[in-house]
Amino acid sequence: GAVVSQHPSWVICKSGTSVKIECRSLDFQATTMFWYRQFPKQSLMLMATSNEGSKATYEQGVEKDKFLINHASLTLSTLTVTSAHPEDSSFYICSAREDGHEQYFGPGTRLTVT
Amino acid sequence: DQQVKQNSPSLSVQEGRISILNCDYTNSMFDYFLWYKKYPAEGPTFLISISSIKDKNEDGRFTVFLNKSAKHLSLHIVPSQPGDSAVYFCAASEHDYKLSFGAGTTVTVRA
Picture 1 (cartoon, chains in turn red, green):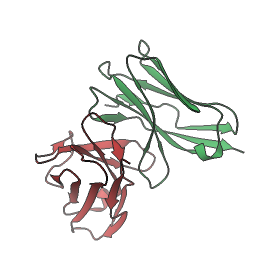
Picture 2: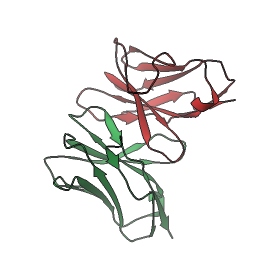
Picture 3: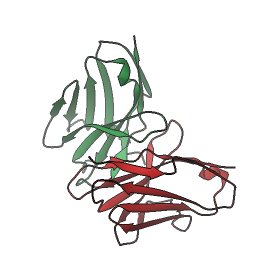
């Protein structure tokens, strides 16, 4: 149980385009989902927290207009990187949790912006 | 501001011996601590956790120790196995909410 999936696992896009990453909880209802970003050999940095049906809460320094997060249902959250630039290339990881339970992480999405 | 610190970026240990990973934190409001294991290009997987009301938690080959006065926790893996080679992240949360992660320690288990 407690499986979180992400799609796509790897995406390459051109500079200036937008990319959407999906995060799904497959066997539980995720009241809260989190989006992280990891640079090579660095820690996971929390970008934002989203609760189903409400606006995401962004961490300091994260541009909410650039990283659009939608948590439309208890099993799906999406992260859209708008007008992507090469510096947005990174490994994006989502996690999901049901109230009172652990966070479970997705396998991550490697974004490369050319 | 890094509230969770793993000061050893790497650790090499011989198979069968003990691996000890260390983690320090600065936020005294943290009340729940976790260790995650991560392989390249994969998401972290949960290993073991400990609440601030305890000082030790054991699960098979993994034991986590918490020293609240020193704001320090450690993960012991014994005996170490080749499959343990991975990056280990220490994480902490306040009231079981969002996690703050350390920078990770890369463990290499030598045969």
